[in-house]
Amino acid sequence: MEKLKWLILLLPFVLTGCWSQLELNERAFVAGIYVDKAANGDMEISLSFTLPNRLVPGDLGGAGSSGKPYTIQSATGKSITEAYKKIQATLTRNISWGHTRIIIISEEMAREGIEDILEFVIREPSLNINQTILIAPGKAKEIEELTPIFERFPSFIPISFTQRKVTLDTTSKNFLEVDNGDMIVGLLSKKYMKMLSEGGKEGLFVSPGEMALFRNYKMVGKLDTKIGRGAFWLRNLIKGTEVTIKSPTDQKLVSLLVTAAHTKIRPSKNEPFTFNVDVTSQANISESQSNVNLSNEKDVAQLERTAERQIRNRIEASIMASQDVKADVFQFGEYLSWYKPKIWKGVKENWPEVYHQKAKINVRLDLQIKRLGAENNPFWIKEKNS
Image (cartoon, rainbow, N blue to C red; front, side, top):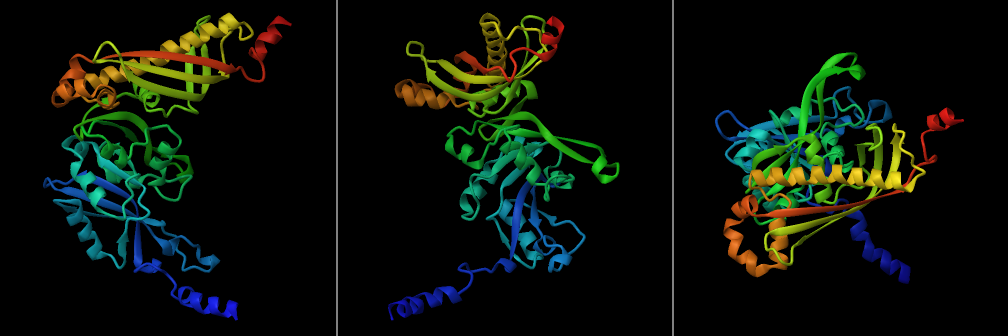
C-alpha cells in the first residue's frame, strides 16, 4: 500500500515529459557567436547553429543528409538584440543560447570597443558568462568557413585551442571581474592553404596567433606569438607547456616540459609602484639535441639558469608591451588596491599613466629540473664514447 501511494505521487512527474517550456525539437541551438562591423556602421551578428536533423546518419534510423551538420545565419543591427531578432524571424525554431561556448569578434570591432557585447552577455539569462572570447583578423564569421578535419563543427576548433592552452582562454567573466576593462585576449591567425584531407582543395586554415591587448574594453595593441607566451606565466596557465631553450654548452636545443608552475604578484613593501613577480616552476627534460652532461649537477643547474633567463625575458617583454599602450592587462592595479588601498585611492583615476610611467616590475624566477627522462644523456653520446 505504501509503494502504491508513492507511485501515485510520482506519476504526474513521470508523465509530464520535458520540464522546460520548449521541447528540444522546437529549439535552434547556437554553438558560436561572430561579431563583425557592417558596411553601414552597424553590428553584423552571425550565429552558428547545429542541425540536429543532420547529426544522425540516415542508415541509423534518422532522417539523414549528406550536407554539413551546421549552418550560419547573419543579420545587421544597431545592437546584438536587434540583429539576432532579425535572424529569429527567419527560423522555424526558437533560438537557444544554452550551448553557446564561444564569441569571436573581428579585430575591427574589437578596436571600437566590446562594451555592447558584454552588456548583452550580462543581460541574457541563458548565456553562460564563462564562454570563450577570441579576436579574429578580417571578418570573424569567416572562421565558420574552415574545414573541421578532426571535429564536426568549425566553432570547436578555436575552443580546442583554449582548452589545450595554446592560446589564452579569456572569458566574458574575466572582463566583468575587472573595473578598468584592461584584458589580454587570444588573437587567431587565418590563412588559405591546400588541404590534403579535402583532395588538395584550398581551404581556410585557422591557428593560434598573437595576443590582443585591451584598454578600457578596446583593443589597443598586440603581443607577438613569442612574447605572448610570457602572458601564460603571469596568468598561471603554463602547466603542461613545452619550453625550448638553447643549451649553454653548444647552443643546441633542449626541450623542457613544464609540469608545475605558480606565479605570485605582490606590491613592494617600501616602494609604492614597484611590484614583485615571483614565479616557481618545475620541469622535465623531454628532448635534448645538446651535448650538455645531464649527469653533472652543475651542468643541470646551468641549464636551469638559462631557462630562467629566457622565460624571464618573455615575461618582462609582455609586461613592457602592456605598459607601452597603458593597458594594465595583468591587473597590477588590483594588487595595489588590495594591499595598499590608501595609495591606490590617490592614483586610481590616473592609473593608466602611473602604470605607463612609474610602475616597476621585478620578475624573479625559480625553475627546477626534476626529471631527466629515461636516460640522462642522449643515446648517441653513449655510442660515441663506447
